[in-house]
Length: 308
Image (cartoon, one colour):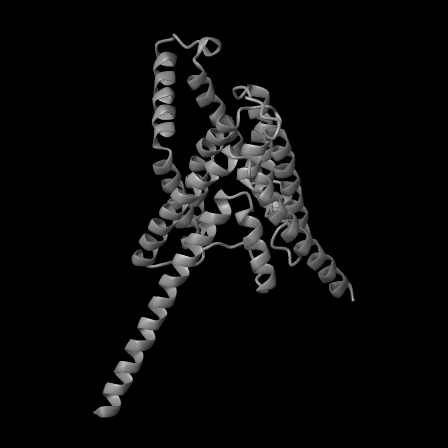
C-alpha cells in the first residue's frame, strides 16, 4: 500500500514538473520572440543560430510559435491603437467610395494614401505559393538558405541589417524633417520584404523602418509604416504556423504565451519608438555586427570541418 502511494506521488510530481517546464518554455519563448522581432536584431536569425548550435537543422515550427506571433500583433495593436483605428476607418471609407464609384486615389488625403501603401506588401504574398519544379514554391526556395546546418548565410544577413541600421542612424543625425511615404519607396520596401522575410537573419523592423528613412521619409512615418505592416503579417504567418505546426501546446500554455507576448511586445514597441525618435539605432547595429561576425566565423569553421 505504501509503495503504491509513493508511486502515485512520484508520478504526480513528475507530471507537475513537466507542466511547469512547459509553461516556463512558453514564457521564455514568448519573451524571446517578442524582443527579437520588434527590436532590429532579427527573430529568425536568432532562431536559426540557436537551432544550428543545438544541432536542430529543421525549420518546422510549433503551435507555440504561431500563437506568440499573434500575441505580438495584439501587443502592437494595443500600443498604437489610434493608428489602427485610423487605418481601418480609411480602409472602409475607401471601399465605400469604390462602391459609390466616387474613388479618386490621386485626390485622397495623406492618411488614405498611407493606408493604400500599407496594402502593397500583401498583394505580393500569393506569389510565395508559385511552384518551382520539385523544390516546392518560392517561399520554400527562399527559406532553404536557412536551417541548412551552417550559419554563414545568417551571419551575412546580420551584417547587412547592421549596415542598414548604421546608414539610417547617419541619415537621422542630419536632423532632416523628412517627407511623407511615397509609392516608389513603398514598392521597394514591399519587394525587399517579399525577398527577405523567409530568409533567417533579416529583420522586418530594419527593412520597414530603415529603408524609408534612407529615402528621406519622416522617422515617425517610417515607424508607423512598420507597425501597420507588421501586425497583419504577424497574424497571417501566425495562423499559417498554427495550421502547419508539428508540435502542439495545451490551452493554458497557449494563453500564457499570447498574454506574455502581448505584454512584452507592448513595452518593446513603445521602447522602439523611443529608439527611433532619439536616433539610437546605431547601438543595435553594433550588436548585429558582433553576432553577424561571430556567425560568419562559425559558418566558415563549419564549412572547413564538413569538408574535412
